[in-house]
Structure formats: C-alpha cells, structure tokens
Length: 334
Image (cartoon, rainbow, N blue to C red; front, side, top):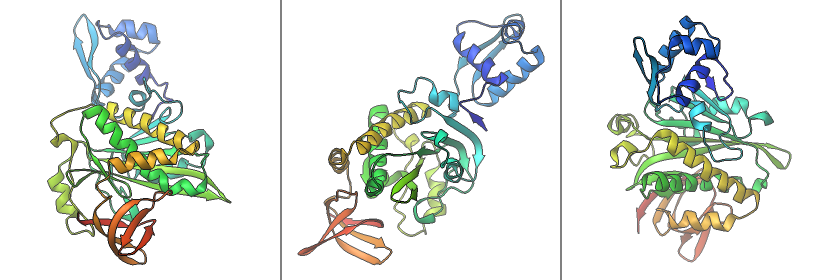
C-alpha cells in the first residue's frame, strides 16, 4: 500500500527524477543529495520501474526518467489536482478485496474526509444491492470518503450527482458523450461503462459519512466480463473505454472526475439541487422511456417522466404517477 503521505526513499528518488527529467542523474549524486545509500537507490529504481515508470540506466551517466506510470498512484492523483478537499489524500493498493470495504473502515475518522482509495484490481468488488462487480486489472476501481454538510434528505440525490460528474469528466477528457441511466450507471450506446454506489452512515438526524464507490471499465476485456455476468439479473451489456477511438491517461480522467464531484458536493451543500437534476436529465437515457423497475415491493411498469427533487424516478402509469426511490431499471421502448 502507498499513500500520498509517503516520505519513503522510493518517493524521494522518484520525485527527484521527475523534477530533473531532462538529465541523467548518477547513483552517487542521488545518494549524496537524498542521503540514501547507493544500494538503496538501486533498489528504489527497480521498484519505481516495477510500478510502471520508464527509467533509462546508462553506464557512466546514471538514471533518467523518460515516462511516468499509468498506475493511479497516490502522488500522481494529488499532484496538480485542482480541488480543495476531494482527492487531496490518496491510498493505493495493488490488489484488495474491495476499495469500498477499506473505505468504510476508514470513513468515521474526520481526518479521512475527501480521501480516495484506489486498487489495481479487486478480488471481491461489489455493486449495488450486494451484487458482484467484476474488477480485473485494467479497470479504474476506487472509493471516495465524504463527510457532507447537506441534509439527510439529499442522500438519494448524491449518487445521481456523482454519475453526472463522471459523465461530464468523460466528456471533457475524451470528447465523448456518455449517457446516465437511473439511478447511477454511465452508459455508451446502451451498454454499461461505469457504475457507482453509495454507502451511507447516519447518526441521529444527520449524515455521518458517505462512501462513494466508482468502477470504470477503462481497459478491460468486455467479452470475458460478459461471459461471467450474462446470466445475472438485469444485465444489459458492458463497454470499455479502450474500445473508443480517443485515449486519455487514467490519472487525467480520475482528476477530472474528482474536480467535477467536488462541484456537485458544493452544489448539494448549498442546496443547488435543481441544477443537478436539470443537467442529469439532459444526459439521461431513462427519461422518456417505457420502463420496468424491479423494486423491493415488486415490479413497476410505466413511462419514466422526470426526476423527483430527491433523485427518485417519477413514473407515469396511465392517469397516476409513482415515485421510485430505489430499484433496477429495464428500458423497454420510447
């Protein structure tokens, strides 16, 4: 595990290479400046290379960083991130059962407000309502801890806003135009690109903390995932960003999302809910569709006509309307 608080020898060596990447640095120079033995320098260089950084090594010249890692390492996330709170702390794991489980363990500590927990892969990733989330290496899997000031009634609107934030970030970084599917999926051409879920903890009449889990199919084998999930309820296909024509570094997309998420967070804190609902509706694949919704009380059929003020889905059934707060939506037809 690495964190944005690390001041280890590895981080010191990496930072020095990054700030002097136009020149070769000898092992002796690094040793003298950083006060680390040459053997330790060599070991740190090897680990830096294992983390995905390209470091050239030339006899008599030394080491030179030629490209950065694609991994979502904590110091990569925090460097240059234009947020005040969200993402200013980050933790990275090679593999973990679930970033959501790890975040929930940390969520009650006020020091972790805004922290991001990332993993290269998850062995026990979870989706909404306890479903399994296939999360191999190549995807973007992370959780965000938040201690909101907004009212408890807005809890159900938060995942709507988070999905909107991801949609906007994808548009800004890749110039693609994904849609949002109620309650909190992001889709491309009707297939699932990303999913979000929220675990909330309440104390008396206020929100103690929210933990947002985000899974993005960034560079994954969709055929392999479909094989594993095709027989699960309400499965409607998956799509990966590597199938799109435009490319972006994972850290650029994640940083953009964290910036957009902070905007949503501030809107909720200042009760600007109408703007969130309006922007989400513009991007929605659900509004205007005939739908069938699996709820805890059974199936509901009707036409999705709008979002309620709390993020619920308002469904028209002939002359009556019904508000659905939670459920799985199947799109039937226009």
